[in-house]
Every structure is written in C-alpha cells, then in structure tokens.
Length: 211
Image 1 (cartoon, helix red, strand yellow):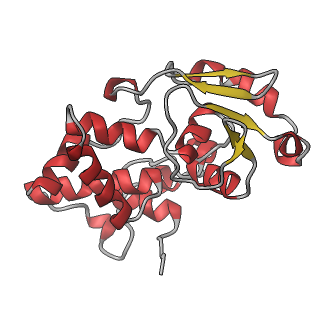
Image 2 (tube, one colour):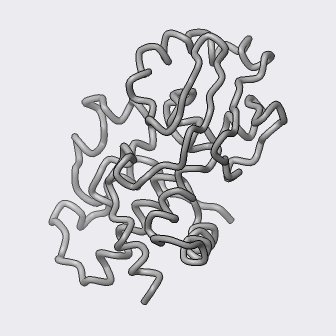
C-alpha cells in the first residue's frame, strides 16, 4: 500500500525544501521556515552526524520525494541508468526528468509535481496527438505535448496563458512552449547542469546503489 508522510514533514525530514507544494513553499507559512528541524519529539535537538552510507541514503530519499517515486520504481531507474551507455548519473538524471509528469511541471502547466501527476492521470494532455495518462511515461526528444481542447475549458486553466507568460523565463532550455496554442516540444535531453533543482547529489545516489 502506498503510504507517504505529509508533504511538509517530508521536507523537514530531509532538511531542505523539496517544493512539494509548488509556490506555497515560498510563503512565510512554509514549515521549513517556521520549524526547520526534523519532525518528532527529538527533532528540535538537531541531527547527529550521518555515516557515508547514511548521507547517500538521504540523497536517494531526497530525489525520491522530489519526484514522487516509490523505491521499487526508483531502483528500476537506477538499473536502466547503468545499463545505458555513458555516465550513469547523467542517464539517471534524464530518466527522472523525462517523465511526463515532471515535464508538465517543468513547462509551468502545474504548480507542483503532485498536481502534474493528477493532471496527467485525468487525461488532460496529448503526446503526439495521442492520449497519455501514465505519469511515468518516458518522453522522447521531438515529442509534442498539447493541452487537450476540452481541458482548456476547465477552470483550472482559466488563467494559464498569463501564468505561463510570467514563468516563461523559468522553462528549461531543453523545452520549448508556444503559449498561444499551449503546445510544447522536447528539444533535447537535459544535462545535469541544466536541472533547476539541485537539492540532491545524483552521484551519491549511484554510489548508494553500487554498494
């Protein structure tokens, strides 16, 4: 059974903002601002110095929670990353970033990855003019993502064009978006240095699974 901690507790557990609530994480009410220590009755006393294994484990947990992925699937991404040619950490980065739910978030259609997951699962988008409701679907270079015509009528997207215009400069350079048609294209695969969120060490994650 899938059981996750409350989003704010997940951030406090990792000691960083995982941006699980989107823009709300930047408000003064953010739990990391008000209670920037681990949850639990002993959390306020601080953290003991972790071992090398413990540090690697925490990096993995940060990445899992950032992308909203469970352990079994994350381990499969690692296996695929080392199977592919090239740098394993680069490959793992691309596997995580090229998920459909993540790209919807990166484009600015959703305020958080959790919201993006809900949008995808409700069939609000098309990929290459075909229905796509699998949140972990791996997008490829050249793919076209479009907001469905009936989705544009939803109250959820009433001010989407204005929102996208304001956040246009935040869209990664490996993605392009046409705000008028609400259509996006994947230009290339992302590189580690191009990822906006660097709150975890991808190399430490590779080392964790390589033990």
